[in-house]
Length: 227
Image (cartoon, rainbow, N blue to C red; front, top):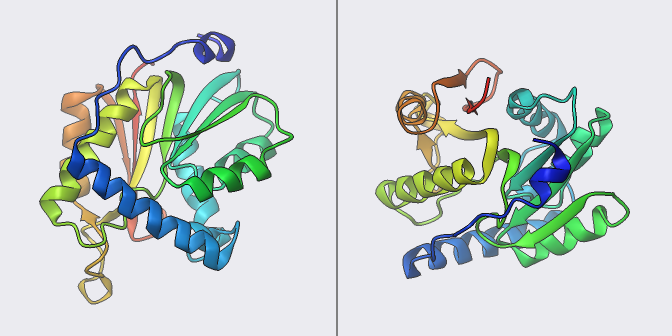
């Protein structure tokens, strides 16, 4: 389906957030709004160490995209819109829906992308339309005071949203449970890559790739729902 067709394809229904999930998203929004206020529109403003790591993450996530033809994309947890910059620099022809729970992030993205064509930005926890692809970069890392069980439930619910909101495929990344123990932080969530590979294979698609070889303490999973 073309990007133009996908722009008009709306999600027929969106689950109503539970009070616990609403509180969790509010905590996340506050955390990232504070980062943006401290560091501005920069990788540190979305809690990355620097531009090299951010670019490397985008490269791995975007392996799910066929950039040789027009497409539509949902960037879930879009921050200030850096993924749009990355794809535009590659010359891709795409429509972009940026979704973020932080009002400050959405305002920053509107400022940054105000002169770009085929861009829509939404302050929300989930997309309101179906795109060809969905990307979630870095949104599963900072659990703050939540337990492993609470954060795992939120992660799985969000993957379900990515699945419902994407037609061709989606990609996401997580910090890895294979990280060095002495470098792991209590406020971060370290996921078992094998468990999430298995979940994606069983729940979403037969064609799933696990990328764990790009030099960061994390992994990326690509879910291809169409060949």
